Length: 289
Image 1 (cartoon, one colour):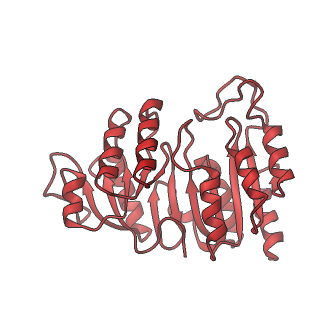
Image 2 (cartoon, rainbow, N blue to C red):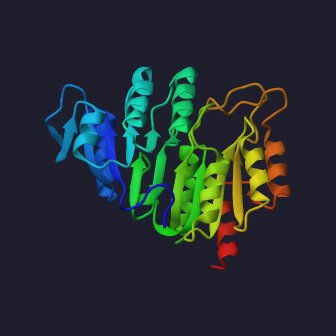
Image 3 (spheres, one colour):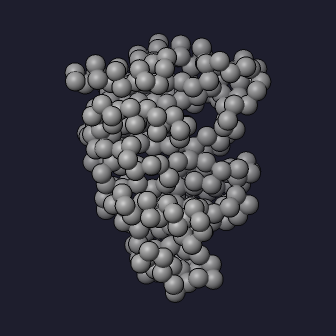
């Protein structure tokens, strides 16, 4: 079992003929992802890497069963692309695009909730079910199949921590990037719930950062979990009131601090690493490796 996506997932690439769309299509194919179609308005009828290209999502859905879509569309029109996928009945939409206006993000997430679909992102690296399917942009070489589930707000930190796990022979079941913006489709709790129910996942790694209250909410659910959770929180030395990297990473009115998040997670029973390289050591201890 994998969560959200697996080797049977049929994927559509929106913006397949753009520079990013084309490059990452090649990378996803190399990972074994089943990409069945792409969209690029005005280029319908052509192919890209042997994949048929359509003018619209509806046209693609008319010819293929599509389970998930990934969006490589500029921020100004990314909302239209996401809504187009959701309206066509696609139930998993991965929005890689960053700098989408917050009101557009709210519209995407609200519509997805209404139609009971999953939006991963915006501003996400995507989702990987190791050895089965990758939708998004993470480097292929960091992921090997295994029993550690990873959920994160930060892409580069995920690559570092997952890369360290892989280097020590510890594989991953699924790796989910929630996205670094203020408004995102999946919460930590949504993903933790899925890992708790996934027989393949034995340990969960949560990679958080300062700002917002997502980690504090996660800690409330972690108290109920039967599976061990290892956490790392980025932004220990960030000054209050200053945005650090992600739009969601800002401490306001004393909320969202490093200390507050670490205390909440620790009191919930999670093991919190102070440095990224400590995560694999803690996971190894838990797995008895």
